[in-house]
Length: 337
Image 1 (tube, rainbow, N blue to C red):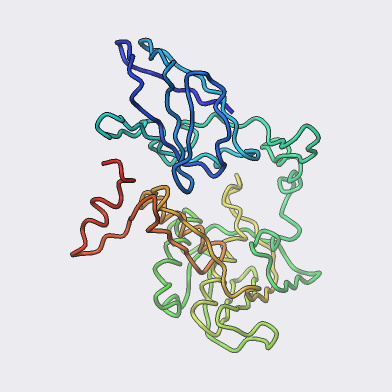
Image 2: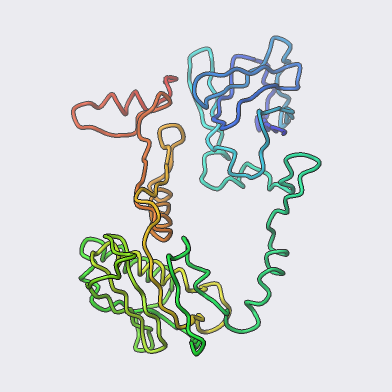
């Protein structure tokens, strides 16, 4: 891999009293440049700094560093943002501007290959080959739209006489049965369908009832989809919520058609695992509030029910506690300020 560092100064920079720190999920093994060396601090924190032979930066110049990491990197998200420079004379710091972002393409060149070795036969998905594989979707309604639901439902019944129909928008009936989950469900319905409520909406009728013995549980549900409307039944509000998420998963919101195609079916669903989690490690690599909220929305759509939110670790403390202000004023600074 290559690190390209651009110096934007208008005067020559001749000091070598600095180091560039960054987080990496892969251990840095070698920097193939005589003027730079590397070191591991702790956890995923690594640095690159100039050696005594470093002559400095010329005005508006760049330095290309070939680097070797442990194992292979096959996607842009292997790289973490917010590289920062430390001046060793006074330990002052500055984040490299184009890495201070949630958009990795601001500082990571798009990968052109995902091959791990020369003999790797894995075929990465691209817009072109994905279109070829899914070409049948543009030739009318899908034959089984239930395959759009993630995770795959426990059981799906589709009769031979089932009809396909188009949906313009979605309205929830008896949404108060969702309890504390109501506002989140309504917001996701509005966001996913990108439409305001109207008389043409397909109705989702929520009901509390008894479920078949083979799927009975707090998070389980049944969903009967017909052209006239959809009924979601569960024994608890959690099951109703996951039923709504499954219905949203059926909708192809990227379709260029004026309506979103759905097929009549009955779904019986229950979770295969009680604990379905996702981790956000804000201690090691800070995330904005907007990024965290988007992640939680995505978790809901995929029926993940536990967020492991890493707020404290040796790289930084992110949880503000009244009366213990130094935890964040000092502990969030990576020990350089």
